[in-house]
Image (tube, rainbow over all chains, first blue to last red; front, side, top):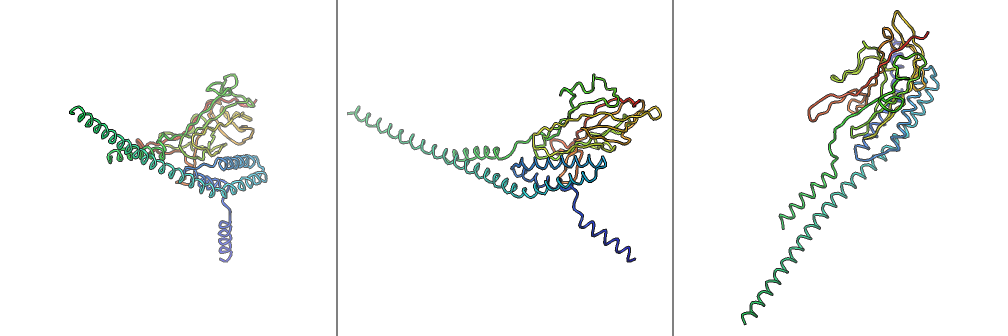
Length: 150
Length: 200
C-alpha cells in the first residue's frame, strides 16, 4: 500500500513539474502573438523568430525520426529558448499595438470633428457674406431708386 | 444651418467609421502543388508518373493565407494508396492515415508560403503482387518503415492536408465553418498520384 502511494505521489510530482512540450509552447506564443495582430498592430520580427523556432522543431522531429535523440533534444532546447524570448517580448508589442490602435481612433475622431467644424464654419461664413452682399445690393437699389424718383 | 450641420456630421461620421472598420472579405486558405518548372505541369521526370527507386521528383507546395488574420498553419503529408480513405471536404474530416512528414509556419494575413518538396522513393519491394514502399527521401530526410502498399504498384498518392491552429479549441483543426452568408464547412487538401516499381 505504501509502495502504491509512493508511486502515485512520484508520478504526480513528475507530471506537475514536467515542462510543457515545445509544440504546446509554440501554440501559446502564437496565441499571444495573434492578439497583437487582432489589436491592429504588427510584429513581423517576432513572427519571423517564431518561424525560426518552428523550423528548428521540424529539424528536431527529423533528427528524432532518424534516431538522433540527443541532436533532437538540443534543437528543441534552442527552439524553446527562442519561443521564450518571443513570449517575453510580446507584452511590449501588445502595448504598442494598443497605443497605435488608440492613436488611430483618436486621430480619426479628431479629424472628423475638425472637418465638421471647418465645413460648418465655412458654410456659416459664406451665409453671412451672402447676406451682407444681398443687403448692400438692396441698399444700392434703394439709393438708385430714390435718385431716379428725384 | 442646423440641417447643414446634421448632414455634414452624418457624412463625416460614416466616412470615419469606414476608415476604422476593415471591410469584410471572404476568408479562406488555398494550397497548390506545382511541378519542377513552377507550373502545373512537369510533375514527374520525363512526364512519366511510373517511378523507379532513386528517381528524383521536384514539386513545390504553395499555401496562401486569406483569413484576414495571423495563422499558424501545418501541412501534413500522408502517403496513401487508391483504397485508403482520403480527406472529405464535405464533412471536414481528414484522412485517418498517419502523417509521414509535416511543415509548420506562422503566416501573416495575405502571405504566400512556398515549400520546396523534392522527394524520391528509396526502397520499394514486391509483396504478393503488390508494391510496398519502405523508404522515402523528402527534402533530404530519410523516412523508413512500411509507408504504403498498392496492388501492382499502381495509384499511390501523396495527400497534403492543411491544418491550422484553432485558438478557440486550443489545438490544430482541419476544417472551419463560416457563419455568413450561409454556414458552410471548409477544408483544404490536395493530392498527386503516381505509380511505383519495386527495387530489382
